[in-house]
Amino acid sequence: MYAILDIETTGGKFNEEGITEIAIYKHDGHQVVDQFISLVNPERKIQDFVVKLTGISNKMLRNAPKFHEVAKRIVEITDNCILIAHNASFDYRILKTEFNRLGYEYKKTPFVPLP
Image (cartoon, rainbow, N blue to C red; front, side, top):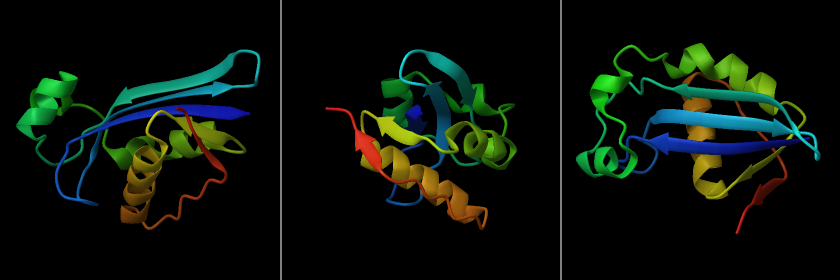
């Protein structure tokens, strides 16, 4: 099983970013068998250049779920999966950082980046 992942963040200093949007498609090698897509309230301001880049604004995230509210679903959908992402090292680092903030060690291996 594969979990195809894409994450958008607030930008900012290394390990201080917050997730603003997450999309995960679970694929069995033949078809998508599950998916999770959500805006996420990062509880911090999005940098202006990121708003321009992603089109996601602070106002859009005001009523979005916070990371701790979607964390269980992320664990469930990525369970027993190889994670795949365009910018794999960045997306994986951000996920691990968010889970570390909750006191949970999120660990997935191997991590396969797309070219």
